[in-house]
Image 1 (spheres, rainbow, N blue to C red):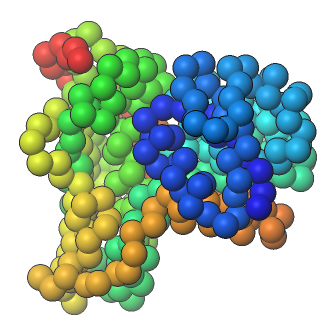
Image 2: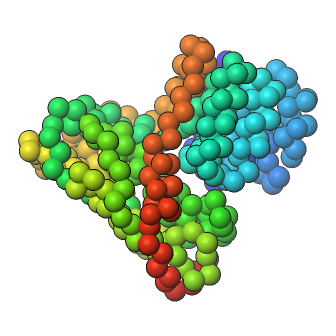
Length: 302
């Protein structure tokens, strides 16, 4: 098994990354780096430079940090000859991820921008069904409770945190994967809490009659749904892509392996000496922040 170091031991690392690594025959969780968190039985470091110096035997780094500090860690890892996985969204800006891709190519290491929602079990069959269809419209409804999923994490509302587009990028990763044609943003209304620097909600309109509603204020049941209308029928993805429904009939799509599939893909990329850097979901976020109309709403506090 290949040794791997997990950097940033927060909620997503504990809930998803650690079980996926431990359940794989490809990987051995050989070290962690975190200012506060750790994994039982795994050597831990609080300083990334110390880990790189002490563990030259670890060839792969998985970065689960917030987007803003991630570039510096990835650049150090690449300079040290390590392969790098980036949690979504892959960085704070498009330019820095392009720079990392150039660095990885020159260093001869793998860089993988992961989009876990694309690995949801309904996404691949949805893409296959839509491949030869004529799309007449689509709608994204992505509404959840930030207090439940990011409790007390003020970084999500700081510059670079992306606000509602942190979870919203999951929907954007799916829609850019399954549609058989490109779309681009035409307009957006972005709701900014009076005391925050990133949006808490958004309404968006793309070409090809594609629309979207994103909201981080939804209590109770959470909504992670995409509907695509075609001349041959209607396709729906629910539960973040885990459930596929075509013309009212649920389609069995196999096991749900979002994060394990990311680590399978990373192993395959390293074996072939390839990188996978897809920024299409993040382009739509950048376009929204460029083109969107800012609407100030009530302050938000955890």
